[in-house]
Image 1 (cartoon, rainbow, N blue to C red):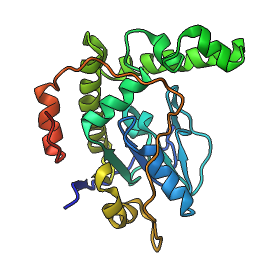
Image 2: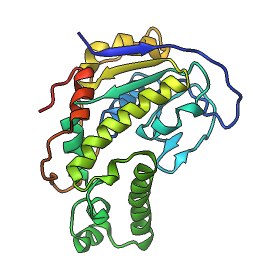
Image 3: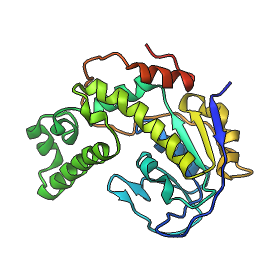
Image 4: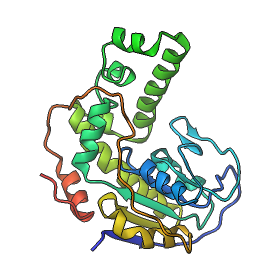
Length: 250
């Protein structure tokens, strides 16, 4: 059976800097939020990706009949109007660790992430040297680190793999806690179960009479050199949370 949990606790709040969207999809980075957004858009259901919630914070741009899919939304669920459905997608933690490890976001050297794992000379050469583009890339990378240091404790750990394990646990728990505190309609599903969970997901998001065809999952972070952090066993807290989500982690 698919792993899912729902809680619905409607409330009211003042319209003070709220972000008006039809629904929100969130989870850890590298957990399929863009994949779900792509599938919804392919079915004609408007779902923006990391436009209302960005690494630079909430950016309310417009009101409209659309949803948002963004892992950056987790700290800001109190910015959603009451009764905004939240879909919390989780992924097998070792896969999240491996995917982020390849990107290098949690690596001790920020240039690994900034240059897609290439040496700086090769990256600049491939980029077709543009100081403005290089500056924007570095600003984007350093903002990710600042964002994570603000909203998690994972950077207090020495090793990259430790940071990644704790990020997975902290971010998923942050979503649960903030959705509960904001009294938002909440549904959690595992990415691995999504193809069989579509009817439940669509109903929760308030979308009716729509057929969502399963689609192939693809890597949206192409161009990164292959790398993997040195293995560190998952902490007990990660194992326990993974078990609650229906995963066995060794």
